Image 1 (tube, rainbow, N blue to C red):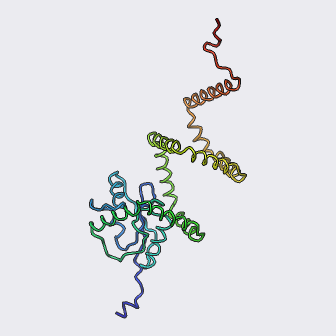
Image 2: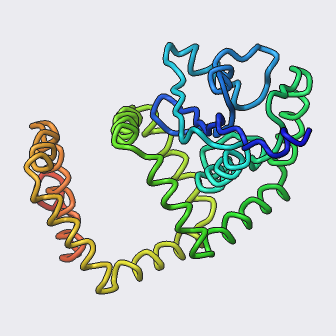
Image 3: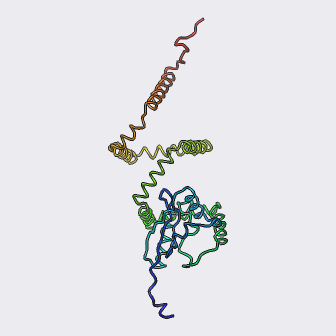
Amino acid sequence: MVDAILAPARRNFYVYALLRENGVPFYIGKGSGRRCWDHLKPPETDLTPKAKIIRRILRSGAEVEVRIVASGLSEADAFALERAQIAAIGRHPVGPLWNLTDGGEGSSGYKHTDEARAAIARSAKGVHGSALGRLRRSQISRDAWRDPDAAKIMRDAIQASITPDVRARMARQLKITLSDPAWRAEQSARLKAAWSRDPERRETNGRRFKATLSTPEAKARAREAALSFWAKSESRDRIAATWTPERRAAQAERARAACAARWAKKSRVEPHVGGCAATD
């Protein structure tokens, strides 16, 4: 008994992340041995958000990437890092993670039954989906980001988790999404509907946006970003490639129509059919 107490803590624990197809993490965990790979074949009775995401990814023909964040840790250090990672990245709806808790709890080797997992998922869904739960998480997130030390830790953790490979995958996935006409039409309709429901909010946000852009600092940043963009040959080539003859013709037609409308309004003369006025 004394030898067990005095023995050094085992350092065979690690912290891992499960990533979506685009490289964004959706779960952070702590384990040892093959713990992180045990998630990759969830039973159909597992109704947790994590299991649903894994099944969807596997059905699409893709693979769930397992990334070891840190290894060779004691259990206490692994729990602490797990909590820090979850807090830094954020749980849904504040962040992309679908962990049911803030981490740092449980005991090594224990596994919930399928019934227990389903009950936990239902309970968490009810709590997190309620207005009170959303308000509480929002307040926790705001308080964390207002603390300079906590904000620095979270920013560093997020930046460390977005490697060049992850960034490249996210960029490719974003390009695919933005190039989908159906998705663009859906987002446009949703945005128009949201603005039409609240004209006062639209006007308030418009004034705030104009006031923000009118500051010397904002103008300087915009100018610097524009100069940096156009200084790259690949940027110029990409823009030039989008100006097809059809697009140029459409743009010219819109410009002519806009000029005609402005001229008609300025001169207050309605255009006559056939180019002349009818006379008796």
